Image 1: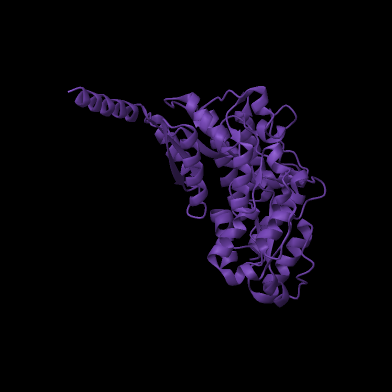
Image 2 (image 1 turned 90 degrees about the vertical axis):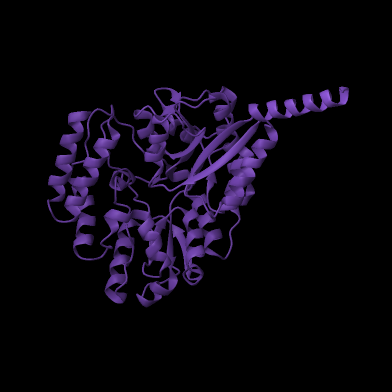
Length: 410
């Protein structure tokens, strides 16, 4: 009888422990299937350190994550942690979809000040910085040769890149490059060129000067004359990566992490690829480098556990491990970034990309701007720039219209 009671008590104890086990779900952006093993490793490692927790990893396409997150928050079933880019974070904070995090002074010191500041709004931290990677230019040496360009002398300025792109199209019929002008991409090109977007107080849009108009006109002319692909404004870097992987684009402006996708999609093109620094605009001497972070959504059941998971995913050891798996991204933590791994070069495009990008970190800055009604104003920006690119209005008229609409909100 005593034995039976002991067995019953043991079963009840196991049942109670199971009932108390918490499930923490975290979402990432477009990491599957390339990085399944690393995400599963992280999940198991956190579970080992926290026996009462089960971690569930969910990967979400970049095009769907904002809508999916807002729906989950509205339904009262948000994930514990969500991977967001800096610009996504701005929109989610403004829509009240994120919880502020509480990082101690020691925890804050783990990260570079600039990345941490990117996720700080009104002195509150809304995300733990994760990975970033300054842009590089992957280029197809075979297309360069066919266009009469020297594969050992890639363009180092924006103008020489444009000249090379024209030569590629004229000589081969293939496209030279697909500039990052879709969406709000032009806002970053303005800043890289040393041109302001807002005045110093952030209360007024100022990007309709003659120099701003001239920069937009450069890309309007390229589009009008068939030097950049027709779907540039619709598909952005996804379309550019696909075009490059198919051997129909000479130069790919990309984060070095996406070079792995080329290797996965078309080994022949990958083997023909070399990597050069992103052509800077001397006036700005900046490279817009989007930052990824881990945030805690509004309405999580256990905010403390959620934040613990976010900080675990972005700690020194795990950021370094993730960088080694991706081979091309860089940590936002001080200790991990100093690892000798990032200075090791190699013969293949992936190793070249990591080495080239590491040399550009001093110029890297997330140029995402914070302003009210970001979603609405960004749509105005996108629509008007597209109208200019399609020849429906002049570059000046488009920028004047955007500035007028922005200043009505600012």
